[in-house]
Image 1 (tube, rainbow, N blue to C red):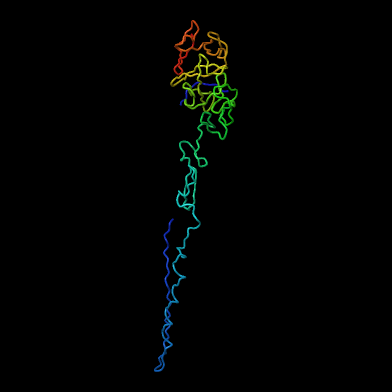
Image 2 (tube, rainbow, N blue to C red):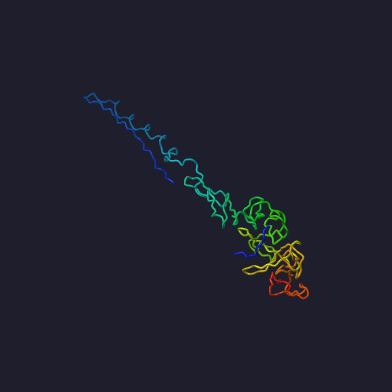
Length: 322
């Protein structure tokens, strides 16, 4: 159980290599010439450059030597590539950079910059970071995984653990009693108070996120309670509805449940709140009854509701009978 302090939040493409072939033409000019040694001696008809000696069809660049499909520039692109552009590397994850490297291989890496605000990329997906270490008690909770909740231990330390089932506004005896999003703190009598970050976290038009729990770092704030200090409605029977007021800023009035509850009524001497009955406050060594400005019946005969020290909660101004 932790005690409360009232305060206001400060708030490479290569072109084809030219290739070709040149036909070799082997010309045999072996023309045998006879030795003309005079009449009757000549080369005769069998020795000439006749049809058998030419560069005929048997010597050409035949079909086996050409620049056809089988002969390329002498370069290939090696093994098959993964990509030709980054679009080929898209892994479908929202916060990864997809890169096609120069060698045609894909690279995918997480980038927090693809997430909004202070979110981080974890496993390819954006996840909110927790602004409170190690976890945040106020909703939405963060910092704990799975079914665990962020709870306030009896020693005033935040930790991940199993939340209890006791709802906000009910009495508790240990931190483990309270539901997720609440903390077992109190003024004299511990209750499960709703943890908060802003007024929007607090139910009720006069419930404010303005109470700071003492000795907790980072600070923990809880919602005030909507209760009636005159009739004591809105608080457990072992507590009484007490008035409070912000110390700075708008100086709004609010109510909380505190205790223990004693028996002293108007004018009874007291040492602390535990000496006074529900609907009364201990101040200056005696119990004073709470009252509403403009409702004379709230005070016994001979007493009036003191307007000088009134605190307004919503549309109702409260004070004490004097």
